[in-house]
Structures are given as C-alpha cells and as structure tokens.
Length: 626
Image 1 (spheres, rainbow, N blue to C red):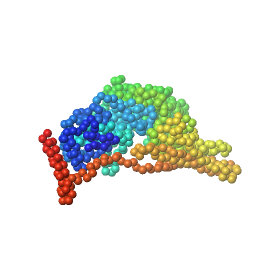
Image 2: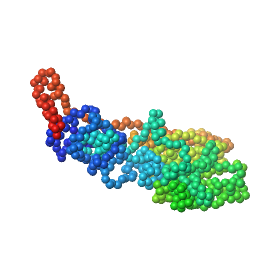
Image 3: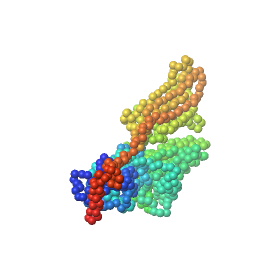
Image 4: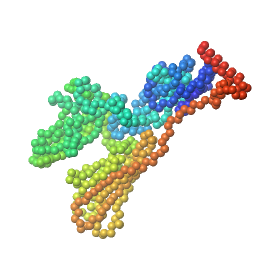
C-alpha cells in the first residue's frame, strides 16, 4: 500500500526496504482489506495532537521518517482512524536550531506605518520585539505563519519517502499519528479570518472579551511591563503624586477638550479639541492648559512596576523639552505664549519599557475678548529605541499593498505625497482653510460658500479651481496604499474634464466652476483568500456656470463629490484540496464471490479460490504463533 500525499508517497514500497518475509507479505494483504472507516483523511486545521520527544526522530524535516520493526506490527487501538493534527504552528525538526522571529511572508499586510510599530502586527520589524505575543494581546491575521497537516495512524506507516516535512504526534487519546506537512502557499502563508455569526458570537465574546472599563490602579501588584493600549504612568516629584499621561480629545458637538483622556502605550495618534474662555484675562496665567511648563514638569515611569518605588531614579524617565517654551504673559489686550500644539516623541524597547520622552511645543497669541476660543492639537508618536528619527518622517500608508477602506486616498504632486482632501465649511457656511480627507471606498459630498473678491475672470477662475481641488493641485493618485513617491510606476495620472468654454455664446460672460466630482474606479486583485484593493483610474469632472461681468456676485456656492466605483471582475472560485483516491484491485472480491456462488463457472474453477483462502488462514496462524 502507499499513501499519496503532497506530491510524494509514504508506504512500504522502496528498493532499500524489500519485503521478503511471509509475515510482512500477509500484512500487506490485510492493509488492503481495511474498511472505509479506517482510511486516513486529510486535515487542514491542525489541533489537538501533542508531539512526543520519543516520536520525533532526526531527519523528519527532510521528509524521511523511519520506524522500527516492532512499530510495524503494532495494531491500532481503535477500529477507525480519526482526524488528528498537531498543535505546532510551524514545522521544524527537533534539536537546537535558530528560530526565525519573522517568518518568510510575501509581505507584512498589517504594517501600515513605515518606521513605526503597528499594534498587534506581529510581523512588523519596526517593533523590535523578540516575543511579540508578550506585548500584544493578539496577532493580526496575516502576520503569523499557519500550517496544514495530513495525518494517518502511525501503525499503518513504517517508512516515509515524502520530500516534505513529516512527524509523529501523540493525540489526546494516546494514539500516535504520522503527519505530513502540506506544501500549500495559500495555507502556509495566510491565516483565514474567523467567521462570526449569531450562533458563535456569544461564545467568542465570552472567551476573548473583557471588562468594558478597568480600574487604572488595582489592588494587585502592577505588571512588570506595559502592554499595547495601557495608560502611561507619570510621576510629579514636587508633590510625590503618581498620575497618567494625558492626551486631551474633543467631545460633544463643539469638540470641547476632555482632560481625562489617557494616552495609550504604542498608540500613535493625534487629537484636536477646542477651549472656550469666559474670562481670558484671568485664565491666561492661571489655566495650566495654556502653560507650557505643565507639559514637561514631570517624569514618566519606565515600567508600571515603578509604582511600588516611584522615587527610584531607575524607573523615572525625564521629559526633554526640544523647543522654545515661554510662560504665558498678559500684555494689554493680548495673552501671549499660549500653548497651541503639543507633540510627544516616546521611544520604547519592548518589555523593557519607555527609554526616552521628548516634547516640542507650539505657541500663539490670543486676543482678550468675550467668549474667546481657540483649538489645541496634541500629537503622540511612538518609535523603537534603536530606530533613527529619519525613518519616522515617512507618512503612514493607506494599506500594504492594497488600500484599506476608510484610509486616506493618496495623491502626488511633483515628488510630494499627501492625502486628497474635500471642501469643509465653517460654522457660518463659508469655506474653511481646513479640509476633509478623502477616505478610500467612502462616497462623500461636501459644500461651502466662497466669498469672491473683485478680480478679472481668469483670476476668479483660478481661485475657485484651487478652492475645489485644494492646494497643491493633485496630479497623480497612488495605485496601491503603499505607493512610494520615488517610484513613478506606482501612481496613475488624474484625468481632468473641464467645462466647455466654446459652448458659451455670451462674449461678456465669465465661466466659473461650481462643482467638482471625483470619480474613482477601483478593483480587487490577487488571491481570493487575500484580495488587495487598487485604484484603476481617477477623473476630475467639473460643472460650471456663467456670470456676466456686470453682475455684482459676492459669493458662490461650491460642491465637491467623491464617487467610488467597484469594477472588480469576479474570477471562478478556487478548487479545494485534492482528495486521496483509494482504489482496490479490479474485482478484488471475485474469488470469494465465485466460491459461494452456484454458477457453472464455480464448479470448474473452485480449486484456486479455496487454495488462496487456505493460504490466508495459514498466514493468520503464523502471525499469532510468532
């Protein structure tokens, strides 16, 4: 017999292992007589089997596994062979070997921020983590290597000629299973997402979920290192107080600053909020949110266990000021040196905690008036301790390689890449300097009113065009979310369709654009198990209206529209794994059927079947006596 698996076979055939004894010859016949219930079945999701050190023999990684003659005669403990698979994630031969911390993946699909550590992306080399699972709560799909095995009962196999890795495992019932690693790139390099439905939702939520709100300070001893998303502890030596590093965020319709929002470990993000003042003259020097010193007059605890001894300088990391910062000053009707932007740069070293913290501040002047308000920006950026600062300048990706829905649509002008933007209106409806980002796969519409200045027709047209498409004017769109500005082949030119000036019969009229529709054609490419979205083409379609030069137009309503069109051509679904084709010899039960039949042919040729049956019974007796 032989077992066809993964391009090779395992079985007794082989020039270096001849079968000359009658016992082995009879065992060969009995293996053919096994019913369908004992035929091995392939398994694509290994779980439940535990490898034993006695069964793991040297050389299995090369594809050959040998058993002793005693193991050949071992009979299975159960009449049927159940599907048993190993729990190892990657196959490797026993012994001292170097473990590859970053498996050979085609590309790290979750590495969206170049030069920075993406949370729960276990294949991100920018994290510099020897054991990512100790810091991350889980590994994102596609960042770890999965395996697929085909297993049969070990008692059926005594020699493997398969060129693929093979091992012997012990299942939960104590039965040894011989497994061959399937060489399938789709299974070995991509992990399938779990399907969640109404049936298993509650079970998954109970298994992987936690409390909605956890207490910051617990009675039990603090953990030895920060995990992703943990609040960062700070210490004020002057008052001997332990607190948290705050990153104020906007809440409510007005975007008021919420001071209690903590910064999360390894969570690089930026927030913007608005501060309102009833009396700015008194708040100018008294409000700590406006004072630059309140953002660096403390130290950061390197690891959470520093709470037990916060005065120990070994656990304290000082906050280094990298920009000029002056105290707020009320001079006449102006509040000077008000903090408008705070940027923290935090360098980490895995489980060793925070190694360096620096802060740069931006300041501005405010006019003292009733109901004064202004916006503050807070930026938090994490990077590995060994990483150079030059790598952190690179802008984040919108996918790797394909676009991710909701990420910015990348545009290029010259050699500078940025996010494409839309019109944004202020509270009174006029066009704002700030603009909305165009998110991939999200249709959007926005509008505002532009106040026109007295100018000739050409200058008026130029101003409105720049307001519609933004500054600078986008020239190219990234085909994939990880497009490099230096590689021009990764960008596609934007097609522009302007208004037809010749269609206007009025000679004293000015044709101005009032609407811009951004049409994006995109499609999925690649494997069905891991499709990647890419942009096929982009067109700017302008709508115009004419105004007479004599008309006193003071403002015009502008509109921008973004429309994403999916042009994916669905291919045929892939076929499944090839199934084993078990065949018996032609008319295997012919002699037995003839012996017990009453046909004429059985009377003439009844000696040969009876002789074969006697030989089989004799072989059984010899096996029992030996």
